[in-house]
Length: 416
Image (cartoon, rainbow, N blue to C red; front, side, top):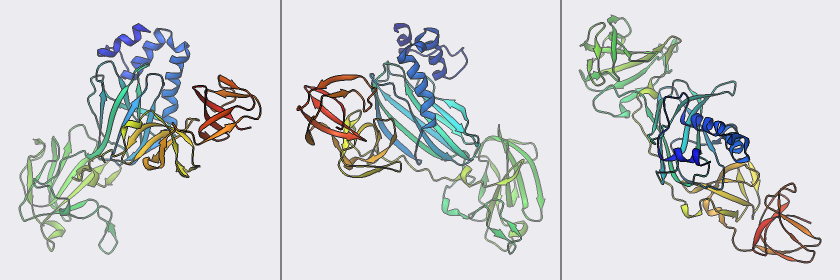
């Protein structure tokens, strides 16, 4: 084990292929630790976490704790729209000797996971342009025997710059897909209004592919960002200031806003379109300047990794939990706790619906000799036996088991 743990304080050999998570898994296998209960559980939990990822809405932030005596992995499922840029910031404490692997996956229509990118071993943030609209999954997993705190923040913004120097979303007044010409066609872009001859800018580094004039767009510029599979269409310009084939950088002026083409009766504006091999798609997610901050965490972080119980009936991912239900707190997010039930189910419960399970709710008198298990499962290990007629302090419950304290031992007893 010492060989494996020694790699915590330094970067991996990046000459080997695979993500940092995959490299660590290979180290476990090469050392034969995948044949141990601990190593096998780490590997299986990594895969299982993807299939039971908790659903979140972006932006998102949580503060969590990974305990050395647990073999945890957590995954988050969320939606992205093509054109958005996602940023994932993961800060861990302590920084040294506590490694968390962060991997971002795409979930396709066949429910298959495709690894897109991973955080490096130095802890830099993940940034990625969403090339597809769909479901994505982020997995976090610490090294074996690693323990510490972390803060995770996930935000989204545009993958391209704004086409005007002054950024103001209120300028965008006509959206993609609205009817045109009495419903005969759909608007294949967004209209951004400003004063006559306002400079319109390149939204990325790239190349001008065509400068021409047509009946609908008037004076137009076609622009292809570097390493992208789409082309941007700038229309209704009063003047074009670039030429075919010209290389431009983000922020360079392509032309001046006007109302040429079929916009002669409208106020000056830029029609911005975005075209792929499959036709026009909505450019708004690519340039939308609205970036929401990750919501602050207001729940107390002092309860992380603690055993709590519900104070009233609550819902957890569609399942009704009664008062006194025992849970473990894994993380704090806004005014909620991300929790885990004894059977491994995950979800969120308002922090004000939970209290520490350290004081007895009631006492329980055994009718027969009772086995006290380390899990709410009759096949689990027995911690201690309580003879008939003994009084047990009841700390909480889960299904048909009660969490009890007896002779300084805390465990689970099946209801008589």
